[in-house]
Every structure is written in C-alpha cells, then in structure tokens.
Image 1 (tube, helix red, strand yellow):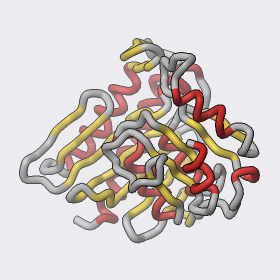
Image 2 (cartoon, rainbow, N blue to C red):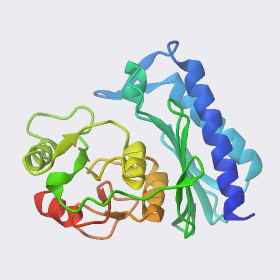
Image 3 (cartoon, rainbow, N blue to C red):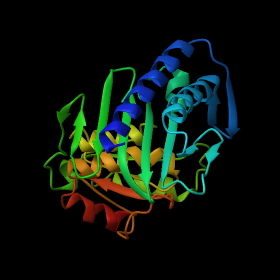
Length: 256
C-alpha cells in the first residue's frame, strides 16, 4: 500500500462520515461528557462508519478515536487518529463549522491527513512531502506578516471558569490583532490557516484527534506549528500555536 492508497481510503471514510452526520441532523439527542462538553449519537455513528470502513481495508492497523476508540496493535507501525465530529457544539446548534478529521501515523510520524466539511463539501488533504490541497487544488497560507493585519482564532475550552488563563490569553491578544475569533473546530481552524482564510490559531486544550490531520495539512501547505512557548510541537501535548509561518508567529509567542 502507498500513501496515496491510504489517502483514498481516508477520503472515502470521511465522506461516509459526512453522510452519517447529515443523516443524524435534527434527530440526535445530546449528553454532556463533562460540563458543556457535548456528545451525540452522530459522533458515535460517524466514528463507527469510519472505523468499519478503514478496519476492513487495513485490519492490521491501530486506531485512536475521540469516542472511546483505542486499538493498539503490537506489531503495527500504522495508527489512524480519528475525530468523527470536530465541533460537536456547533453541530448541535446548527452552526455550520464542524468537520470530520482523519490522520494516519506511521512510526509516530503523521503521513496522511484528511479533513472534510460536509456543510460546504470541502475536502482538505495532505500526504507527507506532497503538499496540501482543497478539493484537489493546491493551497497555501496567507502572506500577512504583522499581527495587526491578522485574523486569528483563540481556543477557549468547554466549561471554562471566569479566572481561567485561556481567557486571559484571549484578552491579551485582542488589542494587538486585527480580529480575534473563537470558532469551535480545531481541525477547520488549522485547514483555514493552510488555505489562507485565517492567519493563526492557538489552543492549550487539544487532544491528538483534534490536531492530527489539520497539523499535517498546515505543514504541507507551508505553515508553522509549535507549542505556544515556541518549543517543538508534540501531537500528544495539548497545546499548539499554528500560523501562516510569518512573523505573526513570534508576536503571538510573546503574548501567549
């Protein structure tokens, strides 16, 4: 199997999950995993669809998914990292900013990433060392160099308390950036930097499935990802700073 074969499989799985999400729209029920951290039947159904399709094709691969999926195979160098619905709160409220995210690791290195937005029929893809694409067309980040020219996204986790440091970070950046937003989907935020729609995104509360596909897509597009303090990015450490790769990155490191 080649990386192209893996990408083709991930494409099909993400689109199938999108069908599942559309099918569940308006008929799901909602529960809280923790305060304001929502999950629906659609999350589980979409994950089951992805897992079933990929497991059938790659029975010797491992899997890690947001909704309790953890299959570590001792003799496999491959692991799929799945977020079946990144942006569940948005989905619940009918706010069209959510996506399916599927990444593939080989020997702990990301090699394939797919993020599918079923509301816009947009598929962001990347293969290691082969660039990043949106619906088959090459994408690149913006060219803005200064924070005061930039639209940036700051993450505030569900259930945050009023004295939380994540709120302080958000407030520190507001006077310096042209626009600061909070959107609710890490996967789409990363892809939007990759495609030049926004210029930066930071978070300190992410899981591997939130980031895996999007980080590879951004890297292959030419963007930059580190931890918020500038140290090397680690998929299994819950903070990141991702930007278009210009001096905006260092400006944000100072503020965050």
